Image 1 (cartoon, rainbow, N blue to C red):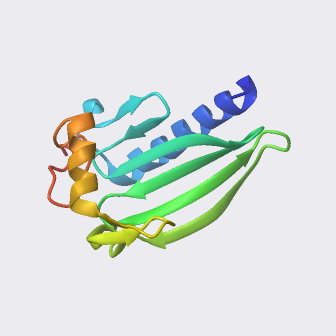
Image 2 (image 1 turned 30 degrees about the horizontal axis):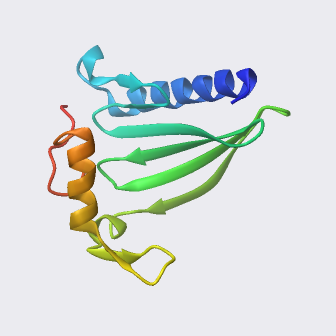
Length: 133
């Protein structure tokens, strides 16, 4: 990732989390945590990534409403744009899905593989522990 988009994406994440902190009003500073290209509060999670050269994306999830928003940042012109937003409530209730091949992916098996790789309750998933408030 080029230095400018990395810096800009970091600034974008910081701005979004500051806005989230104002809306969520967490009780203590420890309610805000960052890990490389992602971070979260008790009510929100944000992840950044480079999608094209000099173009970064920010994915924001609201834990309470189960809404997801995707923003695009272009380093060339400094433009930030909302690309997509959706209510993911029913997405999180899926039991299985097709991955583009002929097979069907069982979400319970996928969740178990993820938990083995990351440890129990690392993320707010249905049936998992929510981040502390």
